Image 1 (tube, rainbow, N blue to C red):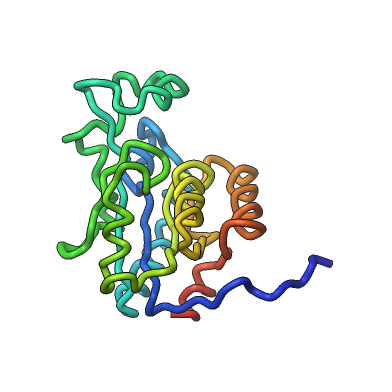
Image 2: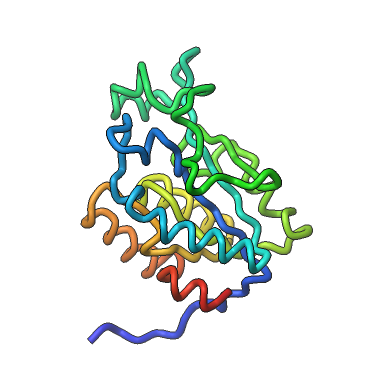
Length: 204
């Protein structure tokens, strides 16, 4: 039997913001340069989360991972993924755009990032501190891709800044089931709470 524990914090929808991580064409489209099939298959769950947050008045913030042809803006990333030295997620390209099924509304914020953690050298923390009024957001809901890379890195970054993390198990897309499940386990143990899409919507 799993060990029972009380939840470490209460989810308050009035203090939450939704982060939609890197649901871009270069990750999601079939045969794309960095295709993550699970992310594509989980678009319906992600759409449910986004729509429910909009109805509940929870701000929706998107991130886009962007590389450059002018210079290697993320040299260690391209060292591990050599194909990204010459193609993929290029600024100004169609591939960096959010997939049409999850397109941001005109009034929603889109953060450009160059590292896996969406907090690193971006405007995200400033946006979160003020998007519902100064200091009101204390919880981030995380959906998107890749579960064990940008989503987990952002969850850890949020935790380090004292944000409560609500990680949505069936609205994140991983490279494979094993790495996806490993992230869910470590988030639940240490960095946040794991919800299903249905569980989150019940809390909204």
